[in-house]
Amino acid sequence: MRFRHAIITALLLVGTCGVTHAQKIDASIRNTNWDSLLAHDHKHFLVDSTEQPEGSIPYEERSISYVIRPSIKRDRKGEIEDEEEGYFSDADYFDINNDGREDAIITLFSGGSGHFGFYVLFIATDSGPQFVTYGGGSGYDIYHHKDTLILFTSHVRNAMPEPDEVPLQDVHRILWKDRKVHKLPVIAVPFRENSPALELVRSFYDEIDKKNYQKAYSYLSIRYRSSHPYDKWVGGYKTTEGVSATIIPAWCSDDLMVTQVNSTDFVNGHEKNQLFYGVWHLIFDAHSGWQLDRPEIREIR
Image 1 (cartoon, rainbow, N blue to C red):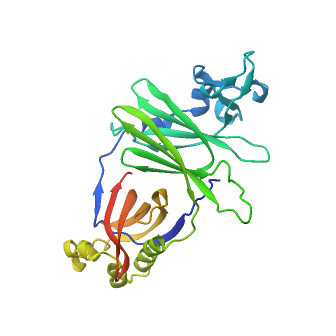
Image 2: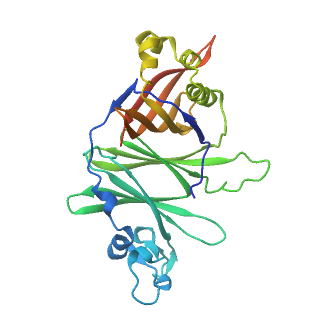
Image 3: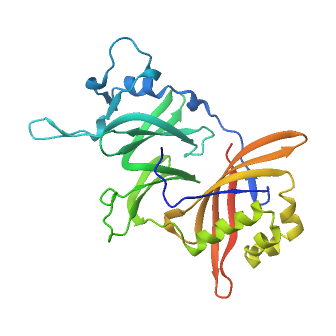
């Protein structure tokens, strides 16, 4: 189960207004047998022999712990004094380098009294998934915006804060630039359940879910409404049966809300399921407070 960070899940109706349709991309990396790959990539991973099951068992039925070789630290005598390892848990897929092929970020979790994990990024290549980088944190929420992967984890020094401490979360950012992966510095930000801006986004979708379109439309900025007349905007919802959306403040910023939407439309007698991803840009008006100003959302599947 993933560790959730300041996430609000709401049922809503979503139209096509403001959404661009992405081209289909190569998703063949989803067919990867990750246990098999990790066990045979001796350059980057070491199988923990103490976790090897007895007998001949298919990789997909094993529970093997993998040590990330680049994480191994040795003392002056050459003895291992620290290493990062875990069991393969699951994989998420994004086209981080915009080459038309999905890439993968897999999670390795360790057991015990705690629940610590690591992420490993693989880029899709002609010769198969290629190891790129790794990092750590306890639990994950993973989002993809343009050329950046954003991972929210619990703060390593504040995973279980004292009553008088402010809960924190770490934000890992992996940027693809100049044909290379760049890991931006990890930042710790306050864990927030609510904020006025986040409440506005939630209310917007709540009103759409209840078909209170006029109310939802009033949450949009004057600038947005001027280029999206009501009749045209509401027409974008005529075929939509319903959707579920996950909303999170990106980097805990009130003026940028990451939104992931699963929609179901009924078109020509057929049900159509789609996945959209992107952000809402918000602005603050001295008289009206926060307003939804510009969606930047596209279909990813």
